[in-house]
Length: 523
Image 1 (cartoon, one colour):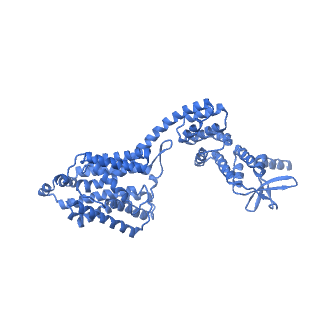
Image 2: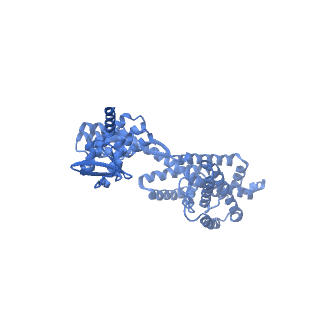
Image 3: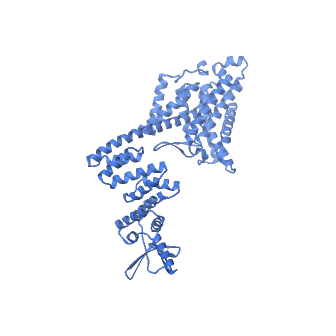
């Protein structure tokens, strides 16, 4: 019986034991020896090695030399255990010295721990470890990466591990291994693979240099398609935002001829309405559905404010553009100060619902955010709704008749005064919808609308005053132009170039992309 117990204890001790040489080198050795010891412990690929490395990083390892015998202890909570055998040591020996890990060693340990997590049964843990190693890992960890690669079944993690293994082989492998790694990198579609191949292009070996140049051309060709797709999506996204911001102005300015400098503040009111609805829904279990209430609330509140402004101020200023401009500019300042008084001068945060969080990785390194995708869909729905309202409803018929010939419309019984109020309310409500959408892209502040008023006027004037189709074409055109020029020359230069283009275009074609029809023609 004693023999069986002794054998069981010995087996348990051997099952626990770490590589004695690696543990002692990590505890007693110089930096190079400690670095090699980390790699040796990683090669074991078990939880005990990870636990010991974590203890070193956290300063929980001590060394003891007694009568020529070295011991490495892990000390936690006042209890000590032998790092090699796992045998408990009670009490903690006196004279033990701490093992100090500097920043450089801690960084190596972090990489080693990430490598060990590649063998975790949890997919998210393995994915996080693979992403961390893809950013740069020591070539000594290559055996463990290969081991994990052989067991991995998840396509995303496997792709990251293949890239990591290839980068390690390029740094420390033989010539044939480096060429094989370069060829594997040439089959990838990752910006990291392009970076690694760009480094290999400068290699002194002609064979390696030639293979790297060939692989780099292949990778750049594939990445170019992803970059084009990303640029196309960015252009559509910006165009949809400009369209939402300008659609309301297309009615108040394009159809009614009112230069409404408070249009940006109506957008801001819609954004703050969304914020208020979000705060109310936060107290309920239905927070992810708050946009179903926030969107119509934004329309109603902004439309009500717009109709109030039309009845109180703007109705007395039709046909007097300068006075209208000054009056609405003063109103915009009043609205900004009112919001600052109610909500404060600091920005407020509107959180995205779960279905608008994250994104779709359409290409390697190119992610389409769900928030932008839903805003593009929302802009399309608003556009279709506005088209149907103007062309298929009685209100739309009245608005178009008053726009084309106010006197004749009045003669046949159209209530022109009320139509003006409804049309202005409609444009203001659409501005509120734009604010609700913009609240999902960033923080909401009193000056939110100021950043879109100039762009909105540019879209309406460029597309053709009073033309809905022109507003759509202009928004998408300016969105694509801005994003393309930003990729070439930066955001500031892009804005300047677009503005200069609009100035020259309007000089050559004052009516915009489409011919103008409305009160401006009658005047």
